Each structure stands twice: as C-alpha cells, then as structure tokens.
Amino acid sequence: MLIRLMSAVISKIKKRSYKIDENITDLIMLRIILEKFLMLIRGIYHKILLKKSKGLLFVGKNVKIKCHRNIKLNGTTIIEEGVKIDALSRGGIEIGDNFSIGRNSIIECTGVIRELGEKLTIGKNVGIAANAFISVRGPVDIGDDTIFGPNVAIHAENHNFDNFSIPIRLQGSTRKGIKIGKNCWIGSGVIILDGVTIGDGCIIAAGAVVNRNISSNTIAGGIPAIVLKKRKR
Image 1: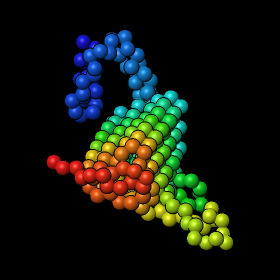
Image 2: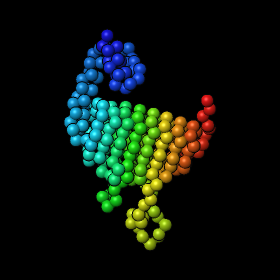
Image 3: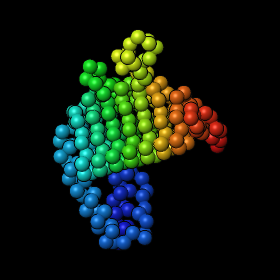
C-alpha cells in the first residue's frame, strides 16, 4: 500500500509515470520518506535565499551554496549530499523543472574575482550523477532530457600559452563556452572541453575527452573523442 502511494506521489511531482520497485519493504520506504522529508526542510531554508524558485527543493546534508540570489529554479530540484554550488557570475544559474545533481558534485561559476564567469543554463528533466565538476567560465548550456554519468567534467575555458616569455598563468584565457543538446547521454568520466557543441540525441562513451563538435544523433568515444557510429531510427 505504501509503495503504491509513494509511486503516485512521485509520479505527480515528476509529472510522469513512476513506479517504485515492489521489493522495497515498507520499513525501508519509511526511512527513504524520512530522508526526503529532511531534505525538503533544508530546501525550504534555501528557497528563501534564492532569486526565484518554483516547485519543491530537496537539499541533502553538507550542501554549500554561494550567491543564492544568482540562482533561478523553474521546478522541482534535488541537490544531493555534499554538493557545492558557487553561483557568482555575470548571468547566474537557471535550472529547468525536474533537475537532480548527485553527491559531491561541484558547480563553480567563477575561479578568480578579477574575471567573473558567464552563465549556466540547464533544461528540464536533466540528471547529473555523483562527483561531477562543471566549470562555468564561459557560458554552459545543457538541453532538456540530458543525463550524465558519474565523474563527468565540463571545462568552459582554455588557457593561452603561445608566449614563452610569460608564465602560462599570466597569459589570460579564452572562453568560447560549451553547448550540450537535448536528449543526450554523457557517459561516466567524460571530459568536455571549451568551445565544444554536442548536438541533440548524442551518446558520449565513458572516459571520452571531447575537444571538437559532435553532430546530432552521433555515438562518439575515445581520447580525443571521434565518431563511432550514427544513431539510426
């Protein structure tokens, strides 16, 4: 009975059919409910500080958020334990409905205050697994329904290094930005570098380093990532 009830509640929150595995006992379900309730209480506190927030906000333990007023939530959001979000940037962070980010992930919009980062835009129904690192020096745009495996890294900046008479750290950087399309699957441990556009419907194999554009409906992998095959209907 409890499993069916919670399946109905989650389906309403997610705005799609959701069925909890029937092997979960009522006792375990009660523990999960308690955990989510505590996350919701933490979320109520953080919502007060945000620029704008729609839907429910669930926040895990040891979550650190800086510059709340630069964050706009457009729907239900889950921020798991240990996540760090620094929204100090020119454009802030805007997140679509039904977003989740896994444990110990980091979103860092600015590295040094002499040059603020740009903007992070995330569509609806996006899921980011544990230990992700998203560096928003240039603009980062993630489309609807895109999912990320654990340990993904996104770096929207490149350091200049052409001048041998000046240390690399003093030569400045380029910030072209990164765009990831809709309905993509970014595998575990993928690294995406500055200036890259990944089209809609792409699959990036685990461990790939993406340093060039990937056209829509492509499966890519390797270091550096190359096209492995095209997805066909």
